[in-house]
Image 1: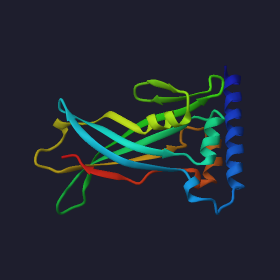
Image 2: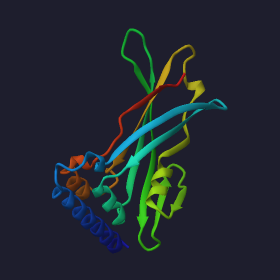
Image 3: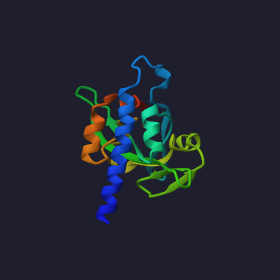
Image 4: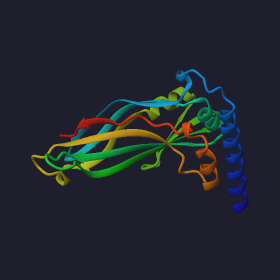
Length: 196
């Protein structure tokens, strides 16, 4: 079993090397529309039975190296970073909670299917196309944020959300290699709204 794991790590490493090597050879004057980008279009919270839930619509556009990595069976981890902030009048605002919602998108060449897995629940959905999988990944719904009882009455809170392509799940050698191409990291701007 350890031998199979090391062969898989080697294969993933070679795939990432090929992808990132191709990135290094790309023309630096490439069209910005071809660059990967994440955009949070809308996000809001809903109070249901005393718990606030997150719903969001996020656009994911992977650049060519990330797409090649995905098609080479390298799973990509998307981390949704969430902060709940308490507004304070005369001193700095206080972050009262930091949460993460993590999804993984992977391609299985044998079945030619794209899989989206929600880490918290273990739920996996299968899609015939990249577009369908990435559209599903962008529909974040009913993610628990915080219990209403943990919030002070008569205090204003706001929520911030951003989406990040997370390379930390890879082995240390792959992370070091990927760090040479910092522009391969994709993340959205923070999207902010009032919780209450």
